[in-house]
Amino acid sequence: MTRLYNRALQSDGIEITQFTLLMALDQVGEISQGELGEILALDSTSLTRMLKLLKDHGWVQAKEGEDRRMQIFRLTKAGREKFQQSLRHWKQAQEQLRTALGAKNTGELSALLAEITRVSQEA
Image (cartoon, rainbow, N blue to C red):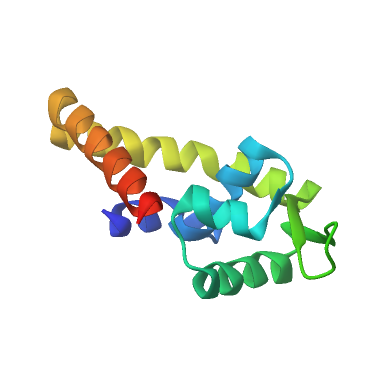
């Protein structure tokens, strides 16, 4: 499945993991790294590495939180533009997956992924 999305996003110069972070930040606005990790069910090490790459591209900006150790992340103008540019290709990949799986299986897969995320956050 990852390969389908990465192929679709390749012309935008972005991978699905990067796109997912941009999408999450687009939806939440500003958020701490810890909260973002909880939402996406990502460990701190992986998320730190991914956020650094987005910062290096100029797509994400960090500022100090209430506690100096906490960083608050948000999209930059370039990050919003990259997200919008890539969204069309992501939607095309979504449609390809929906067509290949059928509506019933797509719904079941979506429900299962939501349950996996919920269980992993409780653990």
